[in-house]
Image 1 (cartoon, chains in turn red, yellow):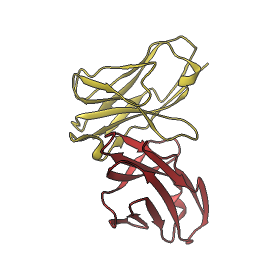
Image 2 (tube, chains in turn cyan, brown; image 1 turned 90 degrees about the vertical axis):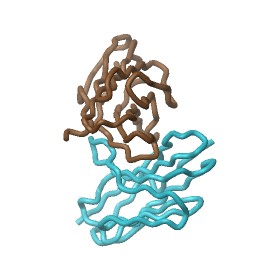
Image 3 (cartoon, chains in turn yellow, red; image 1 turned 45 degrees about the vertical axis):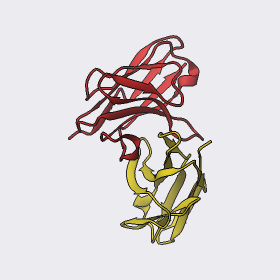
Length: 110
Length: 114
């Protein structure tokens, strides 16, 4: 069965304190791994898609990486406006549907 | 473009009542889908549509109906609301090749069933 696990559930950082969020997955044939950002009271907003192990993508202070078992979302020198819940989702050849993790709630304090 | 819009933003129902959650998109996307989001659980797919006139079930379809008469609209119907359907509902759309493409989500409808 396809599974996605995100850790930690919550993360509190001081402004400027870099860290990483983890997304571990078990799927029968990965078609793609997706990262979304969700602000309180809003719908998820697309960040990145990764397709194969070794792939990396960057956007401002965020960098997503992918291995055969997990993906990391690295946040470099975060700012308070980076506070949000970050969702990971995988798409497998088996189900052809997105499977979402439960998210990591990030709080960045000034 | 307005993107994906959802109405209402918030609704309170009594057990057994029916209602329709509205979803519309102006991006001419073929794929549209409905998810529910509950505390401690990931977004779960309820129903989806690959184009006008075509719908299919997702992971948690029981208690919900959908139809797709136009490309723009994809309403979700609760025929007889139950407290277990208390949740936040998100509609999403994507380009024609489906779930592998970027999903654009609406702002959500918060539903409370008493």
